[in-house]
Length: 148
Image 1 (spheres, rainbow, N blue to C red):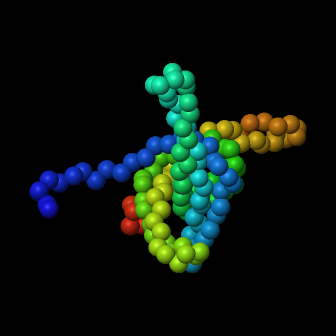
Image 2 (cartoon, rainbow, N blue to C red):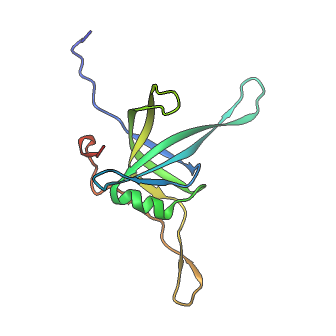
Image 3 (tube, rainbow, N blue to C red):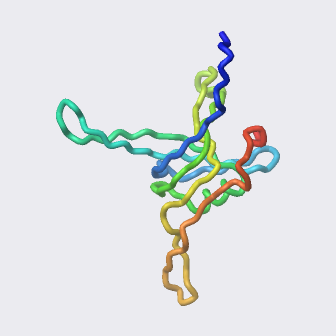
């Protein structure tokens, strides 16, 4: 049923968390880099029954494309804190074990901000922190431009 109501096209996600494992990079047949990682996002809440503070953790898969994907692979490791800006996207795939179709909901990142400093070396050989960085796609990429 179409009521004639036009909904705004809004799909924006902002998350801050830590990587649950090292990022993985794949390349499409056209040579485009795709980086996949998952982040743990925590939420603290007070249990009404006991009055105790508890923690809930959600695990969110994130996909980053192109040059930003390669920067994420170079800079991030399991446990790295990141801030991710992007949009939700669902995709279907065939489960290799059961042969059935599965659907996954993931964040397609437009921007990944590294929240810890990378370690660099000065000319004297001493460890010096490098500035925190950001992995961004060259533009706010329209969904039609994402290679599959």
